[in-house]
Amino acid sequence: MQNTFKSLSNLLFPQTCIGCAKLGSNLCRDCAIQIHTPALLTTRINLLVFAGTRFSPLASQLILAAKEDNNRAAREILANSATRALGYAMRKLMINSEGSNLVLVPIPSRNSINRSRGFLHTMALAKLIVASSQMPTIQIINCLEHSRKVTDQSTLNNQERLRNMAGAIIVKDHVRIPISDRTKVFLLDDLVTTGSTANAAKTALEARGIGVLGVIASCAS
Ligand SMILES: [Zn+2]
Image 1 (spheres, protein in one colour):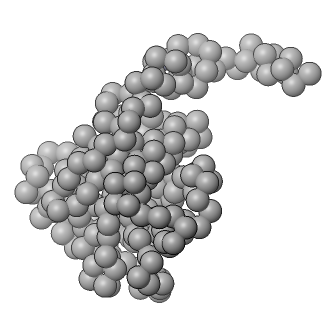
Image 2: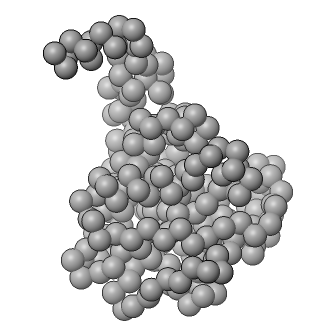
């Protein structure tokens, strides 16, 4: 019965691949293979970046669909990628999930963008990661916000981006972050390019005495 219903709804509302628009599913086999790569480690400005996959046109499509269309399937694929990155980070840094308090701090979009979208993209991503990682003890702390308008980054070079982002992210005043020796803090983002945004987030947390082990990202360029 359920299958009949499923095939009927597929007939009425055919699913297409988010990556290449091929009919049949949210992500076709070819696109799935392309995105399900082994996780990778790269560095940006003294920051370890653990990414589920390398940035690609397909990754860009998925990010756009999740962010701009609030597409749940796309967000799940990005969360899946970030979960692989988190697992890789834990192995690489020899973190034992049993004995640690893992904390994910989502890097927020600008306040005006959050308002126009009506949801918090990286926060939604964090929730899916916790749900799928089988590590129920991960804490999500949504403590960062943008302090001011920054110039659009797309035309800036790396040095200019760093200057542009310096001090642009702050820790919300009313948030208290419980920190102990067992606390392992990671930033979370969908995409890391130059790392200037992640670096601003790290600097803001460090100013509050909170050390950051690295960034967990769905993808990195
Ligand atoms: Zn496809």
